[in-house]
Length: 275
Length: 275
Image (cartoon, each protein chain N blue to C red):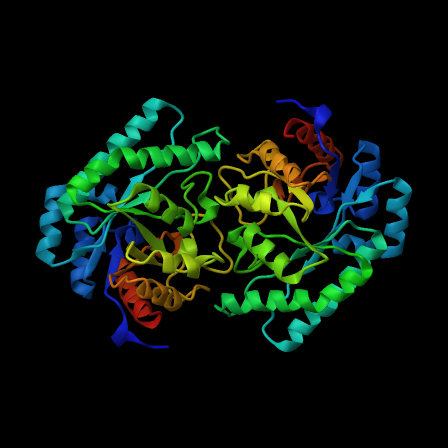
């Protein structure tokens, strides 16, 4: 299927080339390759400086489709939980300074040594409630990103789109969801939950599930190299009212080893071919 | 928590020591260690011979808590699908010959090269419908085992307990679920679905989720070494009417390297400590 003429606008998540390019190089690379969107991680943002980054991105005419990432609320003690909330407040300010379409929330796993999953989920909800007033005041949408269940222990106790939408229902205005096909493609309840997400999809991320997958974190595939029907998932998002960017976010030792310019070129090709 | 006096009966899944022990050694090991249940995989069963195995297990006084495994229905073509169904018919006959409490069904992933997840799910349902008359006639319960979503592409498009129970509802008599804590512990809908499973839990499997997990298939943890609240999940199963064995099933390169006699001894200890 080649529907390049219909492909939605493309955004580059900076983690995709993180081993070789800082944020300035990502911005310049997107401009060279005709990629109209960018989504920085906070490490490269801090390395460049928030003000300089905002100016540079604006000058390049790029849309900031998200800032990665807030969240990571569960902590072993109250001090840790409070520190997480403070860090999220800084992330909200940074997202506002960039004019980011959302702050992507990776909510966090179990605190070290804990088996208390309901407790960790409660800490996520408490943390989101604590930062929501600042987010609303800054006009920054908190995009709750359900992460693949294989990350439940150490990265995200928020595991399904349905669970994310339940949180949206509970929290109200200012909260949406980030749908990454890698995290949700397997879900038997996906079609129903995508329909339920109508008007609440703040970001749409793409990469692919490789067979075999050799690492639980760093073996994501280039769109088209795996088994996810990305076009079908994008159609579900569009049917739910999402008309924004598709952001390509690869955490991949294999692609980190390649020339970033070539990685961006391949992403453009695959983006056209898988949409 | 040490509640050894309350621990449910223990069963050994033979895959746990598969690198060093055949079925005869597993049977003798269980008898020596006072483990009252056993659940063979079909490879070691075939190596010993079904009749000999049935007699040997009966003589040792062990309960066969399950036969692993039927399923693997999705196929690239009709010939492959038909072959899978034939193999499942043989598995049903073997489970009946052993007097197994259930035939554990690992339903299968996407056919090679396919991205059609709804299509694979339909093949699973068609396959189950095809073999259900034989299973009912033989008195063999088909225990649908939802597998962790990280296995969706290559092992099981049946990913959640809710999805398994939907299939039970559709298929009717003779079908139940196998609950493996490793596969379901992360599920935000688990408590509700365990309650819904009342009267339909045919098997309860235990191992643990390690942090970090270094392999998607062969890095399961010994009960107590990971983050799963096994006792809490067992209580949910008991509240849903399950009073049977806890079967320990480890697929682990680390434990496959150890002396099986010692592995069985540690399993007994950990079983007492985690229930």
